[in-house]
Length: 485
Image (cartoon, rainbow, N blue to C red; front, side, top):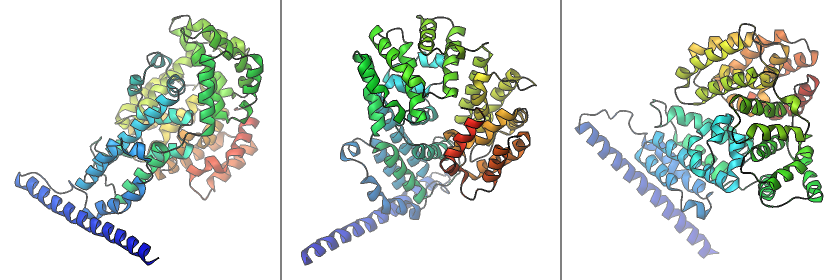
């Protein structure tokens, strides 16, 4: 027993000595480097993070690195660069390397899962989707699309998505990827490292994700008879709404590809009617829009015919838009959101906001197929981000929101249940703007049930970003009552 204690003491002493020695070497490097900069007449103030902040990272980093499986640790080159940047006192560069490691791992997980399935769920623009097929094409997916698409197929959780979205936002505004003077602390940096490791790099594949992966491979390679189809369909009732919608989107993508075999389409014929009964209304509208987009852009490789056949399998041709203005509105919203999610968003948003405003018109008339997309998109850009809103575009957002009818206002009020909006609400600025939104819209609500719920939101004591889970069932009930799903 004494020997074990002695060994433990030796290890602790060794670690403590190593820590002290490391901190001394870092201080020597800092003094030498800053002297070199000053010798050459360059500014040295604010170049390196203080030694105290670097020490916070190194005192905690072993416990976090131990979360990495050994096979992943040996090839995590950006984590090594992350540590090198921390040692150098360049926390902004460290954050950039950490994000690169996370994105690299996420891309590899997507490739190992099902690349076409990811593209079908992550890429909203049909024209862009046509250009994507290989692993190399993942480089055309921006970081926001990547993490949103990964969440859609549940390679990351809702909580993981919110945390990664925060880190992505910080990377855009506070890392070496963007000019800034923001300060990143040692504790924040080590927390972000732990998040990326736990939520992406070392995250086990969920059971349902594994089942969907097997199913997708099965329908592409094997023939599924009626008995097998019934057995598979029996599992659909256990899927979440998000999983059902993602799988249906994957089926559509497979079905409408010109090189898909007739056997695979027959497999989908057997499975789709059972899956369709679980697909929510807003997603059904999206399939009609996809058909409309294909029709507008001309029939390439028989895709329009195949898309119509897909809808015919479930007697869903009624979802084809009466006119194709819905497709134009959807594209305008997507263009605005792409500008909002990119760097320099405050500068880039106004022209896209004006384009959407011209399309909607003075009456704020929006085709029924895109009402939810339109409302959620406007709410997202109206909330802005943790740094504020686009001053030149916010007036347009406010004007369009004032044109909401009661149905649109209800969707906006319940929008906190959407993961993109919920993620925004972890920031104080966005929380305040959501309350402003409520105050603007509640006058439009005549439903007593929705009015009472607005009071619950306004008096909610916790973070608004947590309401998605707190009020999940109540939101679902209100959406059903108001015919929103």
